[in-house]
Each structure stands twice: as structure tokens, then as C-alpha cells.
Length: 441
Image 1 (cartoon, one colour):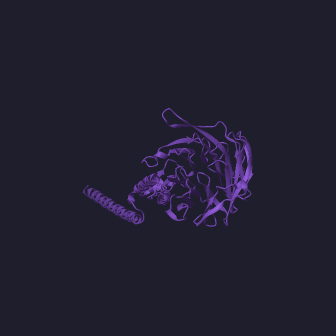
Image 2: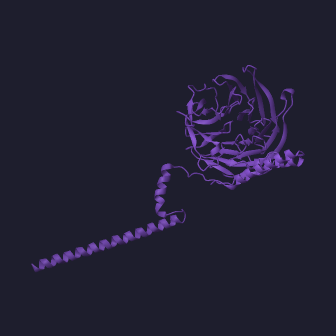
């Protein structure tokens, strides 16, 4: 019995020793693994900012969304960043009454923004859904009570009517039928004449269609420019212009009779002077000035207030070197004092009279700029390129207006005129000071 008890005790002690050894070995292994993990996190922390322990969660989120973080941008002239679209914005348009900015994006919506909210902390907008498609282009009607869109998949024009509800907000209703499909190449631009008499659509081949408001084609234009790069209706509603592979800009007059009936498309004039193809062009608000930007590395300002029916040609006012690239856009302020040119994700603003470069805005968007527009009053310059819309104070416009009024003041002989100019100079200077006082993050 004593021998058996001794053997059992020996076996029990041996088992305890083995268990202790195993436990110690396992703890040593855990300590070693913890040390290695800590070293790994420390190495990651030296490269990636933020707590290392949150790294796995961040990687999981990024792989799920698979999208880069929102592009951040700040500048002293930035008045507002409009952020409601969930996809890239492709087109902008200001209404002729100055109250609204329309934007469309790949998220199947058109957003209507109030321009009076640009300087507020919050920027509310109204949404119009584009059913079963998405709009790539948007243009307001002359009365600011409707807008037209170009449908990406439908390859046609859809009209939306804007109706004011009892609470003051707007509702949107699409027309019962879309325009018929006529273009055979990708679309470049659409527009509605300020006269309300016709709609224009242009594609990348050499085709421009002139439509009535019911969707019937009145005329088709072959631009004979090998390919079109841009086309637009003049603000006065009389002309349609196009540019492309050739180094000129062609302008036609859309002629109507006294009773409002369509008559013909007549060749008006051409802008000749660039040595390479023209990327884009823009009109001043009175259509008396045009600006063009070309592959030859220049922008040119033209006087188009001519009697072309008497064979008078537009004449060149200014040629200025600039940076430009495929897809560059150009905008001319309504009063013709400021030229803005986009190059990739950058914008340059020039004094149109002197040609002086006044502002450079670098990296405005995370992608190339898709549209560039001055508002109808010349206070703001808006551009799109990613999900956000950037709105800038037109500081060069204020400065140019102040200089012009100071020159007029020197020549003024009437005391009432002098006092009026002095008041206007003070108001313009005050507006400029306020614009520069509170930059938006």
C-alpha cells in the first residue's frame, strides 16, 4: 500500500511539473508574439499618422468604400464650396435672373442652388431626379422657369419645368416626351437662346442641330472643322458659334422672320488668328466681345460688335500667353473685364484690358475642371471638376472696375458726376475688402 501511494504521489508531482512547464512555455510564446506585434505597429506608426491600433479598421473601411478622401482646398478668394452631389459634377449654369445655379452630376440628379446663399455658412439646394438616366449637361430657360438636360444614356434632350410651391420652394416635372435621337457622336454642349426661339445641340463630329422648343429640327449645320471641341449660343440669342481642330472660330446667325417663324442659318463671321486648334471660347454678356483659348498656348480677346452684313470683320484686341490643355475652358466676365482660363485642375484669372495675370488658383479640384462660369452679375466665378463646386469672388473684376472709375473720375468735369463716381468707388472697394476678409476653408 505504501509503495502504491508513493508511486501515485510521484506521478502526480510529475504531472504538475509538466503542466507548469507547459504554462510557462505558452506564456513566453504569448510575450514574444506581443513584442513582435508591438514592433509591427510601431513600424506602421512611423509611416501612417494616427493611432496604430486603429489601422486594421481604417484599412477595412477603405477597401469597402474604395474611394479617396474628399479633396480639400482653400484660398483667400474662395466664397463657397457647394457639396451635395455624390458623384462628379459635369456641368454648371447660372440663370439669367441671377437667382440660381444649376449643376448636374453622374449621381442622376440636377441640383438648383440659390446664389444668395453663397456667402452663408450652409448651402441648401433643391434636387431634381433624372429617372433611369443621368444628365451630363444642364441649361436654364430664359425665364428661369425651366431647364434642359442632355441624357447620357438616352442621347437626347429632356426638358424639366420648375414650379414654385406654396411654401416658396420649387418642384420639378419632366416633359412627357424627350427629344428624338439625332446625333451620331458624343455630345459637346446644348443651349437655349435667350430669345426663347430655339435650342442648340452640338456633337464631337461636325454636327450642330437647331431645334424648336417642341423637339423638331429646324436646321443642321456642318461646321467643316474636322472635329468640334466646343459650341455655344451667344447671350443675345442671335448667334451660334463653334470651334474645333481648325484654328478658327465660326459664327452663324439663326434668322427668324418678323412673325417669329424660322427662316435660315446664315454665315456671320469668323475669328481667325490662332496658329492651332481652339479648345473653347466665351462671349461677354452683350455679345460684343469674345475670348478664345487655343492649343497654340494663347488666349485672344476679340471685338465682335461689327456690321458683318457689310463685310466688316471682327478685330483682335489682345493676345496673351497662357497655360492650356485638352479640355481647357475659358470664361469672360459679363462686363468683359476679366478672362478666366482652366488648365487641368488649375484656373488663371487675367485682366482683359492689360492681359495681366491677376490670380492663380492651383489644385482647385481633384480632377480636371469640367466647367467654368461667371455669374450674370460678375460677382462670382464658379467651376466644377469633382463632387464639389467651387465659387470664387471675382476680385480681379472689382479691381478693374475701380481702376476704370478712377480714370473716369480724373476726366470728370461735372461735380455731380464726380460725387457719383467717388461713391461707386467706395462701394466697389468695400465689396472687394469684404470678399477678401473671410476665406472659406
